[in-house]
Length: 106
Ligand SMILES: N=c1c2ncn([C@@H]3O[C@H](COP(=O)(O)OP(=O)(O)OP(=O)(O)O)[C@@H](O)[C@H]3O)c2ncn1[C@@H]1O[C@H](COP(=O)(O)O)[C@@H](O)[C@H]1O
Image (cartoon, rainbow, N blue to C red; front, top):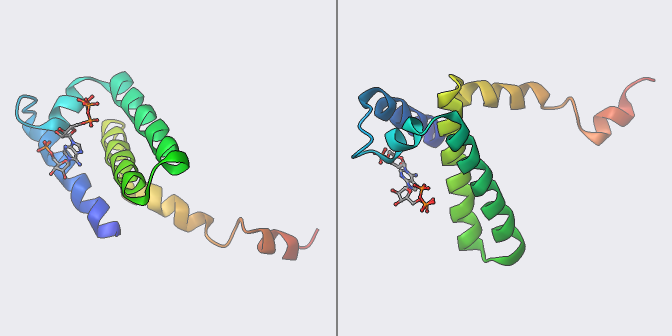
């Protein structure tokens, strides 16, 4: 799973380096700049929510994939990696559960 995201991240970095906006969708998105990239991610998030509420599993799977893809593009544009995001999730693991909170001394 993580390997898939890292592979796609590497592809995004390669397309960014090549910078061929006429032949690469990723390069085309990056050429639009941060604002448009962020807007696109927002659109994909809304489409994912709509699919979750009103569409079938295949539609939601597709929208979730679009969401992750465009998140990777935005992270690349900001100079961040998926490893940094996953490290943050790892850091939180075991620190925020309701059970753990209840067990903590007051
Ligand atoms: N996951 C995707 C992916 N998903 C969608 N798309 C492109 O997005 C287009 C459609 O986007 P939308 O449905 O959002 O349509 P739209 O809103 O009208 O179009 P835009 O606003 O996005 O331009 C498709 O025709 C594809 O060209 C993608 N293009 C590329 N990838 C991945 O990125 C890699 C690199 O792609 P290139 O940069 O094109 O080499 C590929 O190998 C794939 O793994």
